[in-house]
Structure formats: structure tokens, C-alpha cells
Image 1 (cartoon, rainbow, N blue to C red):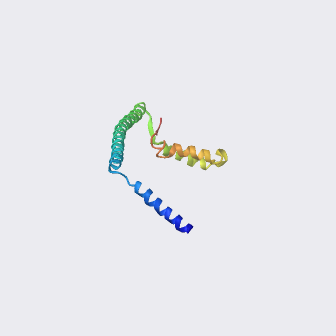
Image 2: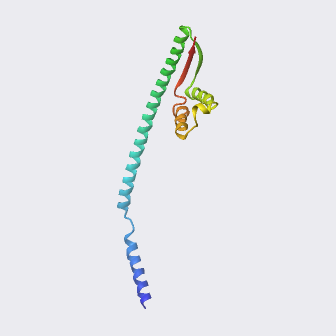
Image 3: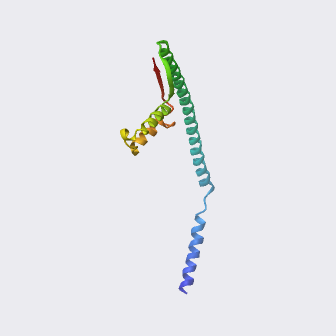
Length: 140
């Protein structure tokens, strides 16, 4: 008997509680309007960010071109002063060549501890400083 009463109460509460859980059209329209507004706002924000990124990429390209022109002027000035260009390479290549020479003389340099290795990676990795800086070596 107790089981039957408990089951009846459970079914009644489910039926009564379940009928109030249905959303009204007004609630759905209001909620949908809010979601649409947020999506539109987010879309505008993404478009603004993309435009800023395009402008910044243009500025970066301009700076890269100016740096390349300055590199060429420095090389030409050295040659005009009687210097011979020995190398004009990326920082990555320059430092890797030095590291190769050092590794042949481990007793003088010591081991590659992890901190040293991380510093070297920062200086030579293409995404960090490796390709951003170039080394000009000239001699008489």
C-alpha cells in the first residue's frame, strides 16, 4: 500500500511539474532575440579584430621593408669604405655556426644545461628571434 501511494505521488508530481516546464512562445522569442543580439555583437567584434590585424600586418610589412633597405645600405656603406662582405646571414645561422664550434671544445665551454639550451632556442628559433635579426660580417 505504501508503495502504491508513493508511486501515485511520484507520478502526480511528475505530471504537474512537467506541465510547467514547457516554455512559452514569448519566452522563446525573447531568449532567441537575446542570443541573436549576442551573436551579432560577437560577429562585429570578430570583424573589428580582423581589420586591426590586417592593419597591423601592413605596418609590419612596412617595417620589414625599411629594415631590409637599411641592411642593404649598411652593406653598401661598408663596401664603399673598402670592406668585403664575408657573410650576411640570419641570427639563427650565425649562432648555430658558433654553437657548432663551441661544441667541439666542451672542456672550455661546459655542458649544455637546460637554461642555456632554452636561451639558445629563443635566439635561434624562427618564431622567436632567429629570422628576425640578421648578422652582417665585413672585413678588410
